[in-house]
Image (cartoon, rainbow, N blue to C red):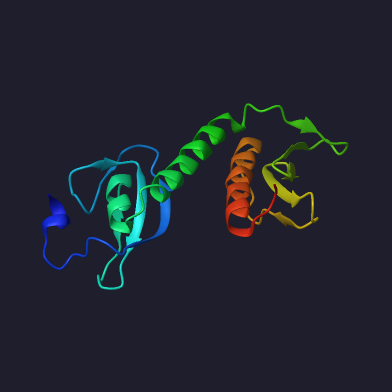
Amino acid sequence: MSGKWSSPGVPHKGWTCTSVEDLGAPDEICEMCETQDIRYVHHMEHPDYPESLAVGCVCAEHMENDYEGPRRREKALRNAAQRKRRWLSRKWKISAKGNAYLNTDGLNITVFPKNPKRWGARIEDRATGRFVSSRRPHQTEDAAKLAAFDAMIFLKKERGWGT
């Protein structure tokens, strides 16, 4: 055992994952084993430990005593990253108003010019009619499309939008 696994006072079990993030490349070292380069960071908390730890999948599995959950979380991030890479090359349709749009995952995603130099986006849940519009203007149409992708992932995960 290495790192905090061999440190007294550091719990080995009973941790909870509070969030997971994709760094885009293995740019951090797992804070538990202190040896593994990690790209997908599982943020772990324990009631008997004062700070959260940013760890890799294998350490998260042991810390949670769950050998499926961390892999599922990581797979979802990998799938989202692959999908985002293909997002701009998808066949966007053009609405009657001349705006680019996609219907995907039960959502209607529309990107539109806000003024000659700024772009906005709107996401609507097709089943319920609920929608959100971007508050922040984007410099390019592609930037607005990528922001809409991130918002779509958030809405699906946090609010259960779409299918």
